[in-house]
Structures are given as C-alpha cells and as structure tokens.
Image (tube, rainbow, N blue to C red; front, side, top):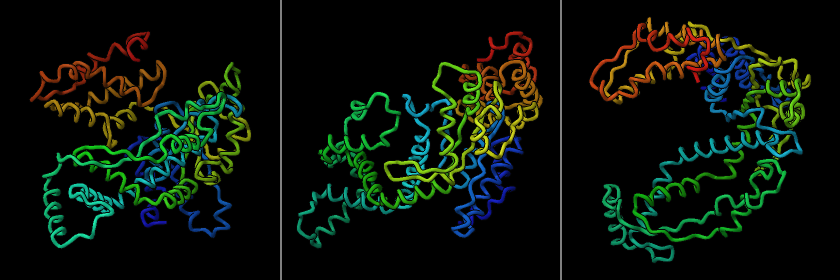
Length: 449
C-alpha cells in the first residue's frame, strides 16, 4: 500500500467526496469505511486477508441525489477500476441479451485499459525517442539491411534531427508500413442466434481478426506530422508489455475493482408485480455467485470476484429492499438511505462543488465576452423553485437544476453576442419572471421535460 493510500482516512475520504457531492453524509461514511477496510485488509497476513470480504453496499434514494457520483469519485481517489451498469440490461441465462458475468469482463477491460494508459504515460519519453529514430530512418532511407553508418552518415543524421525537432519536415511525405485490421463488424457476421452479448469474451473477434488480416502490413504515404502519431502509438504499444499489463490489471480488478449496479429496484419491482419481461428473479439469482465471490472466465483468464466491491442502488419507489431475494439482500449488508434534496442542498450544489453549475455557465458566457453574475437572492430563489418542482412532479434530484438553469438563461444563451463586452446579472426578479410559472401551474410537466 503506497503512502497516498495510507493518508486516505475515512474522514479525508468523505472530505474529498464533499468537493463533488453535497450532503448525503451517511452514504459517504459508508463508502469511506468500505474503502478504508480495503486498505486495512492489505496489511493483514495472506491467510487472514483472504477471509476478509468486502461489505457490499445498497444505496436507497431517488434519482439525482448523488448515488452514482459518490461511487465514481470513490474509485477515482485510488485509481480503482470502476464500472457502472444498469441491472435492467441483463437477462437470465438462456435468454437473448447480456448475462451478468459480462459485467466482470467489462470491468476487467476497464482495468486493462487503465493499466495500459499508465504504462504508456510512464514510457512516453522512450516512445517519443524511438519514434524520432524511426522517422529519421524514413527520411534518410535507412533500412534494416543497410550497412553500418559512417561518420558522415552520423553527422547527416544529427543535422536531420535538428531540423526535424525544429519542425522543418512536418509536411515532408514519408512511406510507412502499418498493420491491416480486420473488417469492422466481421465477428458479427458469424454471431450465433441466442448467444448472449459478449459471450465469446472477445475471442471470436480476435481469431477472425487474425484470419482476415493475416497480420499483413500495407504501405501508406503521408506527411511526417501525421506519420508521427501512428508511429508513436506503435512504439507505445511495444513498450507496454502485454503480459505484465494483464497481470497488473487482474490484480487491480480483483483487489480494488468497484461495480456500481444501478436500478436494482427494477428487478424487485418486476419480480413482485409480474411482467412479460424475462424473469428478473432469474437475474437476481444469477447475480448471487458473482457478488458473493466466484471465478469468471475472460479471454485473459479467470477473474475472482471475491474482493470486488459491489455497490447497488435504486429509488425503490414501487418496491422496497425486502422485495429482493433474501439471498441477494444478504450479499448487500450495508444499507444507506440518501435523502431528497432540500432548498439549502440545491443552493450548495449551485455554488460549492468544483464543477458547480454557476461556475460552468459563467465560464460558458465568458467565451462570448459576457460577464455573468448571480445575486445570492437569485440563487436562493432558484433553489426553492427546484425543490418545489421536485416535490410536485417526479423527483429527479439535482438534475432538476439543469432544466431550470437552461430555461432561466435561454434568452441570454441565444442572444449572447448582443451582450458581448457587458455584464449580465441574474436577479431574484429575473428568476421569478422566468420561472414563477413553474410553481403556479398545475401541470408542471408542460414546462419541465
């Protein structure tokens, strides 16, 4: 465990989450403890660590109150592979659609790309140096079977290097050899009817790609500037040891991976009330071994899900957590309730986070030369209207602010060029003028999409 992780105490984790998600203290505490327990586990003996399993979490609350954002930001704190899935996208084994094991394969792909990107970044200088040598070879017509360079050749190469770094050859055409790729969608031509999406683990695509391309290379002529991008990518891939990347990705996914399962309440709703859809109870049953801990086959080998952290979430408007299968409930032992947002919450959302909407709209208008300002009274009134509309219609949480802000600033956004070089202040009176109808109308859906 590195020093940065050691510094991530539960209080510091929650403080970091506070920068992006307002309120929901109970949920933040739960995920902070879950993350810290992962760090504590790494200090245990291998025998004891194997027995310490993640305390999976069930988040209960309306949409737009921060469930997904809490999980996503938590993963970013420790560069953990993170995958958000929707429970309703999966079908019971034996039906056309995605099987639940595909979420683990998708998570591994996320982890592998993360590791490869980090390796490429670490090797960026070496890849750039190798790319420069290849371009010089092309400019000087140096081939693998060319005789050893003379002193004159070396001096000429350095002259070319200086000019290359100076940008003199950016438009000079060179011919490079690039690998052919299999025709797009070739694997889909051989899809087996009824086979779940992703069931081939990517093997079919790989095999057919090899067959159709034959690893052939074709010659392409292009300017040095364009060739550099292609060659740099090739050199970066060469420096990333694929076997080592797979090993590191496997370890990171198994020990730090987080899967966020959204809309899990829809499984309970369908199961409880019945529907013509594929059995949602069957999907719950298929999830049980994945969440409890099992081995899932991927094209890179088996992935053990025993220590992957699962965070499930749902609004549970039409159902309750107890409508889930008892076995699945037992695999989500930590339950936290996220509350509907109050006017004070909306005000803080507008002003406090690093990506606050007020900052976003101010920056957007600055690009048009408009200095946009918001009076505090205007922001307070905005917050009251957002909370009231959520109470009277469908509660969509903080997402309500997006529709309200768009309606409020619609005219300014459309006529921004006429305000260029001027200040524009949003007052409480302007808020009432633009948005008061939302509170007075009996059919608010006519105003808010």
